[in-house]
Length: 599
Image: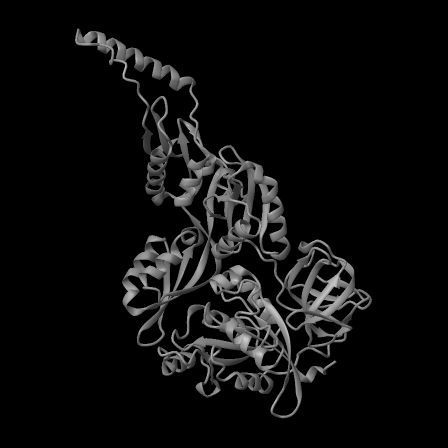
């Protein structure tokens, strides 16, 4: 076992697609952790979805042995982190398990929104930052711009910067030497009791929950009884080991080590990311800092397209929940869509990925309802309730005010897109706090936006307005009161719960009109004319009609008096009126699918 002073724990942080995983591949190759024969592109990204989209979804730890130029042998524990803002809590836990961070900047893109956010996360954790400019062999690389941005925006001196290329292997040894020289040895090793931080966990159907842990002080070995400090739950440790990158069993995990812990715990919700593991025989009194519960921000209903797939969907959600503690779900039913689940996600990318995994890995075709956020409703008398489903919103008469969650967003955009961007922010009911000039061509807008408004198309619109050069980072802000109302869609006078939504009063009319138009085109003609209405409370704000099927009752009249035709038409009209009173409108299930897919 290597001594703690010769251990270095570091992670790689960067904006999406700046080359974290490719650089990790080169580090594994240089330290001979994985033989060239076995090494594939994006080796640490284990999911097909990760390889396909070129993004990291789960963080992957790996232990490497490296003999430095000073002749000593070092143990390097690397954590590859996700770059997308939805997974920032996972990034912050990985950072908490390290003493240093390699900050990667794409030579052709420069410093992006996520680069700044992750660098600040690392600075707040007091990590030693090693700046690396990656992809320097690209023809479009602009090193002077990157160096000046690092100095101006992040106050990182340019002489500390290492130039590298993950693809062609330039500068890889320099990075390893910098990690050995600049990253301090493991901290807090002299704490008297055992403490280790859980920064991730996965579920194995044979062994139960496997916690990924960084040991700060003391040691963990098989046979010890561990205790989780947030819940006090005790469990016997069955096995410990490290990642090389496959799991490799070890006798003991000592101070400074990063590895996995297999215990008797079978329910993944009992081990939470950010929790502290200690020994039941000599428990620590203080938890490691920074633990917080992760709360979903975006909710939507997921329903199987074929009702016979309900059990399959239930099993799929259960399995996904095992490896993703931030995802939550509960059963619900809808008159229109049948039985399904109300699911909570960290953000839109998280929602998209879970839905894609259900379709691919579990082969269940699903339809999702319009995404919504968690509103706080203050009733008369002061009682506050949380509402994540528009159907559960109380009557307007008992509501004093509705508060919606906001985001503090920082948008990095080219100067030329400023006018269009401000118009988009205003359209989404946002407020710009301040702007900051980054360099000659780019500015950063710091603004506050309602989460509800950016759910569906904000990122796409940001990319199109800035011609692909804009990037965004956000964190959850506070709840603010807003003039929100529940809009219902009535078909032949009956509300359809699948289309209910909570919208801002100013936008209700246009959204209601859009939905009514779509429905009038999609619902097939009925025996009698049907009104499709959008309503707020008792007030109708938009209306369309579904056309009726008509039999030509005057076809058998050849010539003759007009009164005979009139009589037949009046009789038909009377029949249609009678039918309308007792008739039911049958809305085909694919109507919901078409409308929800297009909305």
